[in-house]
Length: 115
Image 1 (cartoon, helix red, strand yellow):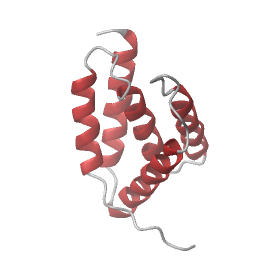
Image 2 (tube, rainbow, N blue to C red; image 1 turned 180 degrees about the vertical axis):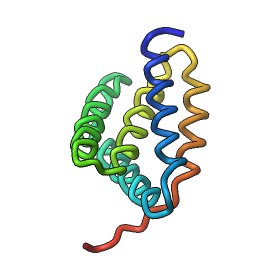
Image 3 (cartoon, rainbow, N blue to C red; image 1 turned 90 degrees about the horizontal axis):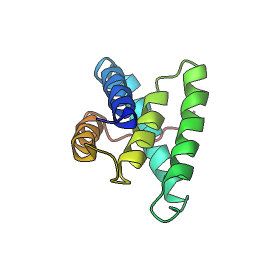
Image 4 (cartoon, rainbow, N blue to C red; image 1 turned 120 degrees about the vertical axis):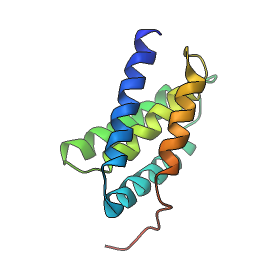
């Protein structure tokens, strides 16, 4: 396993633990953030299969939410990791993809609410 794969694995395990340890309302917030991240990355084109711009955009939002102590940061990190794995050029990417799939199954379908 290379260093990047190991780092992504650890990040994914931590993100999954945040999801598992969250109550229903926090999972809803994570799901909503994940859905927002999906919408955002859909607007950012790949550069010859490279998702770096998409990943950076998600990490920027992750940093914002994490600094605020908001559990929604987990949704942004999950999407960032998913984008990197989707490049399919990491050792063990298929296994990581399975973990991402399992993590997303733990998230409820978020319905945006007005605040």
